[in-house]
Image 1: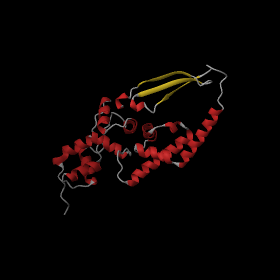
Image 2 (image 1 turned 60 degrees about the horizontal axis):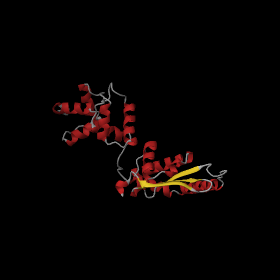
Image 3 (image 1 turned 90 degrees about the vertical axis):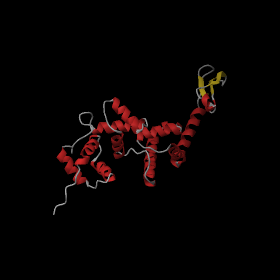
Image 4 (image 1 turned 30 degrees about the vertical axis):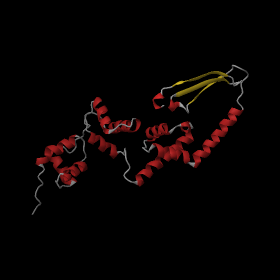
Length: 244
């Protein structure tokens, strides 16, 4: 005796709405199971085919999937947008889509805000470590980065989301980078040691002292490179006085 046909007509409108929102068949099945409707993926695929909704795409005639994913990556890694903010900006582009769909695409392509377990966390840290190592071999630009700038740099350039403190600690404690930084400091010192100018007023050097910046004090000075005479010095209130 054949099994009775599952009655999905009562939830047909809900299923089609979720399909229009771009939810995968697996996700729709999971939602239906949560609501007490027991069915498998094959059954739902067959029923969607009968309803003419099997190949429906939420991005149809608006934007291709690859471009859509790249848009989400830009919002996620470059700007750190939440799903709500991503939906808001997509609507400004004329793309009507739900937060649930954005989340599904984001997770499907590895854009996670949290790690499910220690293994995922270690994998992300290793990716960040490899990126820093390769980038440092090509350029010395990151050696002066602080925590915040290093975090944004790795997030945008490498597409890896690791906490600021963890990332900065990895960079500071790596013995290879410390050795390379020491070699650079020695090379810079030798360069400065041999630096010469022909006489006074040939070159002036300007610099700022930012140790007191967070307390509202901005300090800048200019000296004559030859005589070390102070040409001028400025001490005033900066734009960080709210912290003082």
